[in-house]
Length: 131
Ligand SMILES: [Zn+2]
Ligand SMILES: [Zn+2]
Image 1 (tube, rainbow, N blue to C red):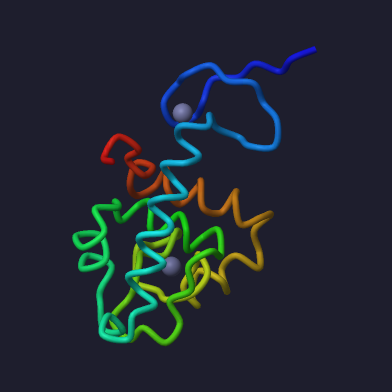
Image 2 (cartoon, rainbow, N blue to C red):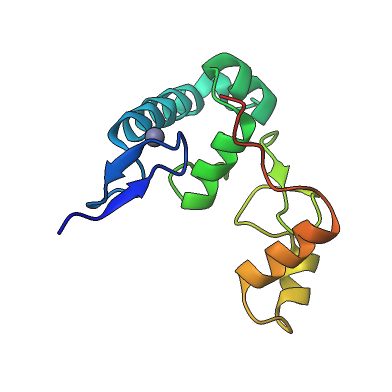
């Protein structure tokens, strides 16, 4: 029996196999990833900020952060490349949380709980309609 789902990105119906979104969005995301990856691996872009990367690649900052969270883009060694901590929005360069939030997290249930609680306190979740 087919497993029909709505794509979380565009809402289109698709058959769930390995991917969690439809083919169109999957390929679009792969292209975006490719652009970001190619841009930041050039040595002349070592000092780029996330805004520079977003403007040069036309990929939204949220999408770039998403790739970082997935571990597909690594920004260690990029001195100016920071993105907001999921807990407090302070700039970080690694993982999803800054050091103070990580320390606080030790007493919490899970990183996902911690982040969703923090997001309710501070900002709405990432916009998804900006690409
Ligand atoms: Zn889609
Ligand atoms: Zn933090």
